[in-house]
Image (cartoon, rainbow, N blue to C red):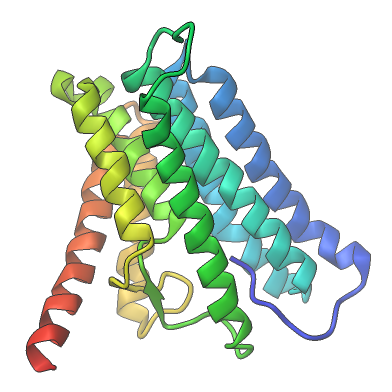
Length: 247
């Protein structure tokens, strides 16, 4: 997510990272289009959106194009690619593979995920606006891209490892509800925008690179990324428990 700054760079510079952000929106739309007939491909599209989200802010810093416009566009991209797209994917893949003729109560579960993501983004932007020095050191609540990757890689594990139970509507609905609660929670999670040391940064990107390399080689990279996401959450819960004991 791009930091908010007071002075805007020239439009031609803003266009460079904005094109990366818009590409992420395209991947989100592609995932929505593929969700019904090619769910695994829809998951790969969301992986692409996640990569765009990881690099757009860095591109902005390289070209000197950090701006208020970029921050707002990034949030709009996130609600599409990491809110609507994964919620629709899970809804069509597990909750309601065949669209009902009337109102479907499962839709409320998908909506809860999108709504919690919107609240999480608004809270993040408010906190980021009060910290003009750059990325914050710690996230409060589960970031919406992490929530999206959690449910997306759960879907991928069904195809990669043959875990059929994952497709059970109650399991995927529980995953959506859990992510919704974590997004609006106060759970402290390490920031992947600013690292405390080079070792942590190296480990973070190495794990992601390994997951992506596995995907490129036709190995269960989505399942590996699911394990990495779970490890990230475990670290957050560990921080929360240690602070509760200390307090």
